Length: 143
Image 1 (tube, one colour):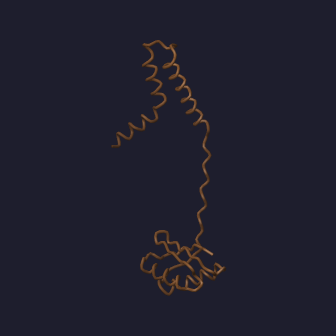
Image 2: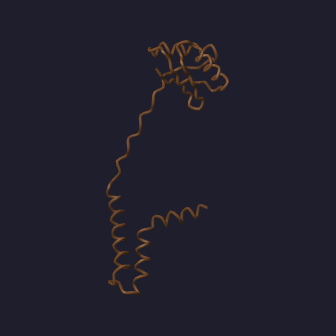
Image 3: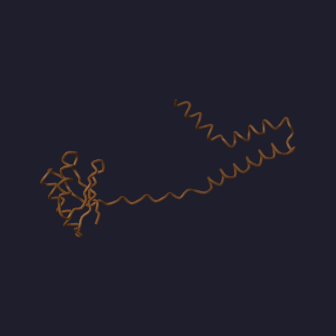
């Protein structure tokens, strides 16, 4: 059965490899891998009792490096997704729909006189893309 333990206070890569090698030599352990960055020991063992396995790992750690504490690894709970307000998305969607209608009417019908076509399209593009344009201006000022 595979289990994950955290080896606290183990910051020496050489000591970690020695502990890993000693654990892999145990008869009850079929695989042991230690990740120094996360201080996690992933171990596959035939021992069912977690406390007995932890005590065995602790004995190997104590024989190799002082101050190492073996604790069962507990995964942090996943963050709950934040509920977003729909009114912001609805206003963005409404703006896109209105802008699309204005562009279609201006381009494909003769309802808008020719002298008003270019200013109408410019105003529509500004209304639809002001967030992107503002982000570009801010990023341009940052360098």
